[in-house]
Image 1 (cartoon, rainbow, N blue to C red):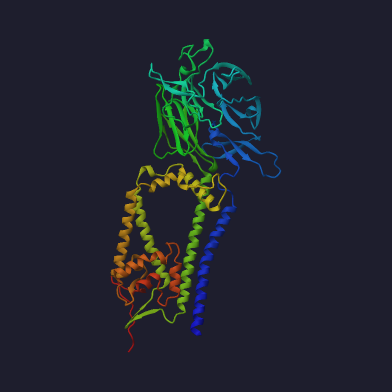
Image 2 (cartoon, rainbow, N blue to C red; image 1 turned 45 degrees about the vertical axis):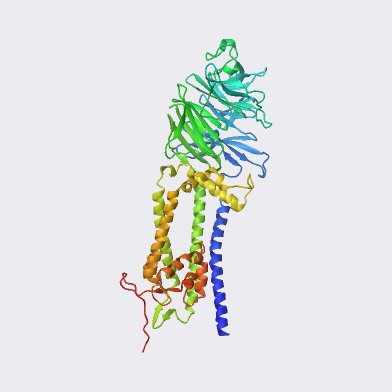
Length: 620
């Protein structure tokens, strides 16, 4: 009965310690998660979009629109509102201008140092903190273009009454009809002229219908003017054709283009192909700086591309220097004072913004980079990581204390074999010894990986913090089962994972070096422990491994003990199996000790070069 009562108390005490070791860490982690989730939003608030890429540079600051969804907000009769904010480019501080537009999106444009605001209702002039309407806005189904400056007037391309196209100029706050122009049709394609050998535009054959999918074909026209020259970039949707032209081609005979005969057809109107733009690319904007025309293009799931047309008519790729990696849809700006072009790379959900200067065919590093929400979000994950670490330490300490308290109830803490006896190593000494060994292995592997990863293409770029945040946020979406656009989501297909995947993909040298280092370190530890019974951690804590005969354990037993670490410390996460085994072992043996028939004992203090047992000689 006494033995049963003692066994029952031991089982109850062990279960209590195991339960406490699990409840306390989970409580710490749970409270931390609840505190972080209930705090301020780390990303831009849901329903609010900071349209950095739709802003304009004005007097050393970026003026940009912010759209906010007001549905579901009490006492709100508006579906959404649009505000105008100003971002100081030196300090990164945002300020509200006081301009609010209800239930309408807004676009900004700087014309002759005057800021104009476009809405569905018309064109407005920004006067201090209010908007003054100056003209109605035009919409066109067949051609879409942002207003541009032409002959010192704000100009837009619209459909003419007879089905063609014409220019409309804003003069004295009123729209005035301009000259009619010629534009290629949406069904045009490039064909080689057999006479000249050059590419020319020609309508598709009737047997080759456009894959419209029910959509109405239209033309995306972008215009940039610099030093008296007008540059046109045209993209037909959904055909995907790109064409460039210097100057408009007017239908009026007296104003016919000097680059084509007056009676030329639309097919030979001076347009030329853009070899670096293909179907599927989406043009994000064009500007002119002192080195020529710049074009920004994007493609789904691919980084941004920049190309330039030189004054002699050559198209060249603009390459980012080392450390610069553009991933978002950018906006091109030109400083009128210096004629320097900039790429404003912005990512709305994280309020991330970076301004990259362009010199000739190089994109230079951004200065400054604003990523306040990015840093807040990373701080949240660091706090969660700290909570997990604290919880894990509490888990280890609770298990260690429980094992030691149960060991105090034993009649004695020694081990005897024949006429020799030794003192068993305490649980906390063994735990610290394992920690020292694990830290040493981690340091060695980290050094080997750091040497193997000395690749300039794998360096940390400006936008990698943002990609890391979005990666973690996607993980949150999956864990919390937030509603997403697609029920099935494969993380490996996300472009923001590409940077981290390239570190390990296709790197046999990395795998081989890590595997070789692990095998060498484990082999040395097995040899030293089998020969002398110690590892660096055991030597530091004054303990050693021996067989049940109190002799060196040998290589076979050391190998078995090392392999069974995976079970004792479950997948190297929790030592719960080892702690439970030691709680019910009279010799403080974990599973690896039981299988390999070994024990861990204290070694007598003395010279560190000699390993001796603490022997108790029997009394006469």
